[in-house]
Image (cartoon, rainbow, N blue to C red):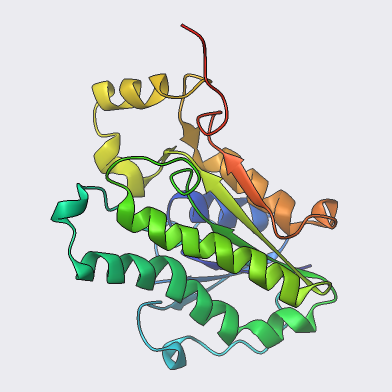
Length: 233
């Protein structure tokens, strides 16, 4: 049985990943509140706020075969309406939280024969989108971190990043809270739908598994084609 650490494993993509992995593995979940986990087996939960000091993260003594960092933000508005605190918050949650967690549990990851880290970016890093200045900046830093750590940690720890388009999760609720908004989002994608948490969690599972043992330093776009496909007409 392998042991995986999921930060933000109680909601959205993190929860779906927890559900999949906990069927045959031990899953350690770090989140501010315990919810949606009572029906699951093989779970160890720690209450934790990644915006706090790294010293407040729980001590874990066992080896960790895979780490998934799920916390994120969706803070969209015109650039002139952003303030410095908006950018600082997005960097704190998306980038610095990941840095804290990876640094804290690096030795646990090294203790595994072959371990894997999965981070999250957004399609808005490689495809410029209005109102995304803050989150695209923070997630762009995550992509740089992914490639740098993949080089530094090879060959013992693989590091990859998933860059989704809008996905049906609680985090995106404000963007998808009525039928008109959902339809508009679907129409922007060549595949004419938006993503769901389960299909992205299945990709996370693959990136943590031995089946992806020759993949590292990659930004995998899971975006319905929006970043690379333009339809005629």
